Image (tube, rainbow, N blue to C red; front, side, top):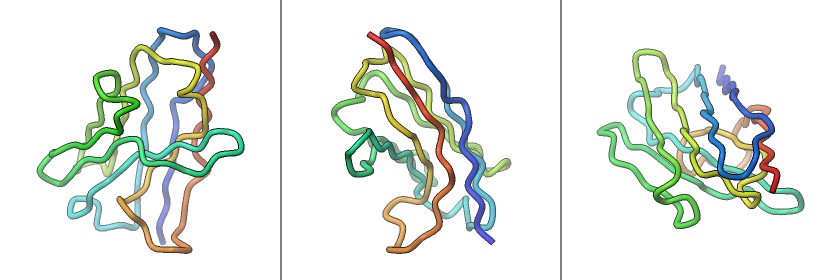
Length: 116
């Protein structure tokens, strides 16, 4: 049974930092490209960053240079360090494999709110 548990969100002022964590169980974690997504109010969920099993990374242009994704395969964890946060980073952040199939399980996410 797949379980995705995100944590670490909160309220932070613009320019601040947060580190999000995700534990992913029930997936072949070490073999997967894992990713962080976010969904702003009234918007579709969008890909923020992903990390391959060999630690190759991808970042959306909006977060490049500010966010750092990492993984710990021994703990089935994927983390997202977010620096220099902006109000437009506000949203609910989710972790999952890259390009999950339609109808795939998603966790509750963790809310990030950046005040100006």
